[in-house]
Length: 147
Image (cartoon, rainbow, N blue to C red; front, side, top):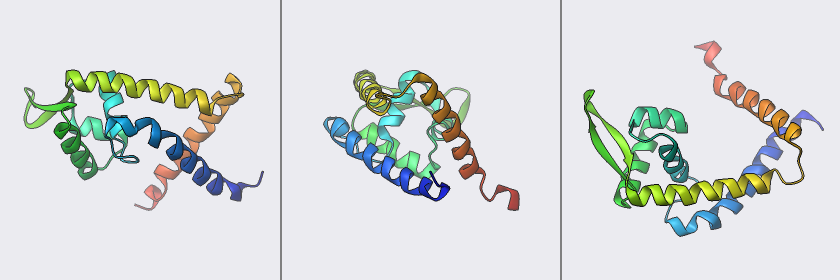
């Protein structure tokens, strides 16, 4: 396979991912492609985090994270509590409804993983993840050496 196919394969994979996730997440009232499901799932793993930590962990810009949190708070799935360690920041926390929805989202994520990895060996998945992680690092570091 030629290197110039990487971009096309990434686009094809992203399109297929969206086609799978959109119907699976439609019942949650989340905006497809905005990462709101990722936010809820992250908070299920680690609740009571600052907005900055959440944005960094979910790979969001601060403004994008703020809009997503506003929507999710309006849906009643998370709250912002004052951070006792810093007067200027809040801790982001799941509500009971948010915990339930995040668990269901976890099931959707698990199903997606099974679909993606069907008929692929553990070794192949491990190699793919290592290569894709390196590609992500390359993309994320692009231009940093020029700064």
